[in-house]
Image (cartoon, rainbow, N blue to C red):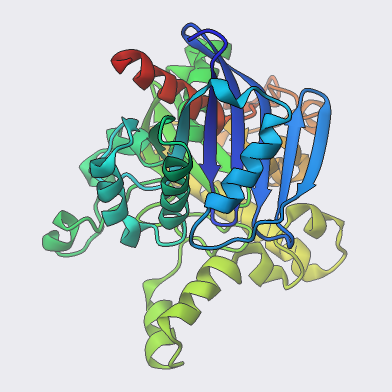
Length: 394
């Protein structure tokens, strides 16, 4: 397997992140990465190889069939890497339901099973599936694997998963699943490597990006998470609402006569930081704005995150550490500072200079709760899970 290449596809609702990994025995080492941005016209492929970056406009257009997009993208990749050595591709698939509690090789049966889960993730699941099908049509010789965002949370208890709804609905799959599992799996392993004693304890990880959630770990296993049945739940996000009284949905349907599609668009695309501020979904823009609505959006973001940390700490029975990750969590000290201020009663205290420098450990010596900033790497997890499947059955 030495000198072979493995690709990873991290599919979002509007972008696809591509990782290029060199295989060397039991290890997968990233040697390049790219992003296809479906929000830009023409479609753009941003490629990074070592210190070099390239922005490449694609002639292909977005559509139900991604074969033309992939074919053109692979052509550009072949200018930089020996594409004949690609042996496998690993995909991030958002929803595994109760069907998949770990990575799997992709075949007709697993594709059918993933497709049946589409109603649980209607914005994300179809994107991953059409990419899988396109790659299969273009390169049937490349083995494909799936890594599931929900799988890491299979250790969560039934008590935490259950809504107070009729039991029949729970049995039909209406329950809390949790997401961002690939990120939390990476963080659990990385914290164990950097601070093994703390990693064995009670830890809340805050994955704060455009999509955002929190996960409570005990002994490196997921015990609770802020996202539930869907990726709307939990804390406010860039454009998603977070936890919401379901009576609001009933009101919008019955009293305002809003359509389900309009409500879906509101909750996924026009709420969150964008909705509260009326200015931007980006915390960086809001921090630079003097508008009171911008400050209120950031304060609400921090307030809800702190409240969710406290709730998850209740599940864990305490809190030993708080870990910040993903784009906002890793790079924006003022967000971490606001969250910590709301959690001062719980013993969270940051060291200002370390926090401002995005240092690895940002808690003060007096803090009763350790605080860290650790970059996440979902693609590395996808690559390692794909490699493990190849080695098991090669």
